[in-house]
Image (cartoon, rainbow, N blue to C red; front, side):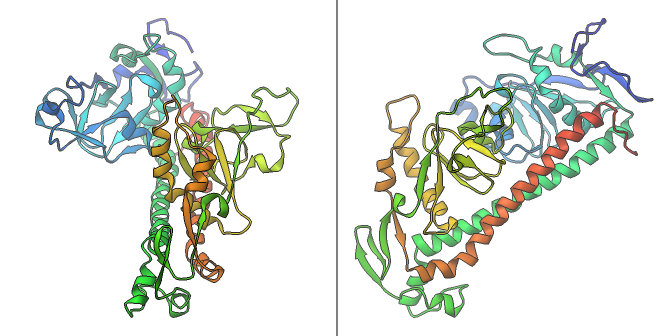
Length: 435
């Protein structure tokens, strides 16, 4: 990693490339320009009643995939005049902040703010190949950014980046191989979104809206439910501290249906010859992986070791409830590992998620820099528990949905590992592909 004699910025190792390949400045292969933002940000003059997608960094990072398919904000025509309008299919690169050097491809036309660089007018350059090349070299690109408190990748630096370029047919072949892996990862993500929505809908119908009970009380057969299962639901309601609930059901506290094990303040620096585990903190929970995680000693009590499929609940800072699928790890403080010896996973997972928004409101009300909840809030959060026969009968309908979500995520993790293994070999010319 160094500057070339003619001023280009080398972000790949200087190696001997296969025949027909060459190193070249990015500016010789495409046009780079910066986005623009109307000021002041968020002003109604530019954003009021807007319908044009306003593409922000968060729109790219929240899914972690190649494509930006929708935006949370929109600008109006006046705002678009002060920005840079791009078509669907554009390649953009984050030029500042923690995401600097991260590339994404748009699937919506819209406007980009000044935190993006736009690559256009490709010359013997495949868009998807450039996407993978930029994301492979992101960490090195960041080392050349201007500034200290807020590093910035300006257009001059971007144009001077030196990358390896195979002939165009090989670029397309490399992008096709990597894209096939990413397509399957994206398909898994979409499938999981559907599976999770189905599981939530079932839970909402049975335990919040009481649809089967209402149907039976009205003399109707519950929709989509076989007679044997429907017979387990009552046809009337009784009173409770929560108001009317199905007859025969009980009110219990969240911490009565599950155990919430808080993590440890883990030692960051284990002995050199000691077996280690990645430390699962809130940041790892949000990302869903252990890339860049601290390491700690693996000699922990077994209950503090996390495995795929475990339910984790971050009770401080960014409150989240997730099915962990990032591989073995150690449970850090500020995370609960949620288990139960009495109830199936789907039951305590969905009841915990049911109370999540209220927990977030409680945490946000704390007069501290990092809001949190306390154990008393788990006790104050109430759940409804039907007879065991109901839970046993419903488990085959909902638990397999969560099990498939875990399976898909583990498969995606394997595919992502394969992609990361292939990426430097393909773009470094060490693995030749047929065109």
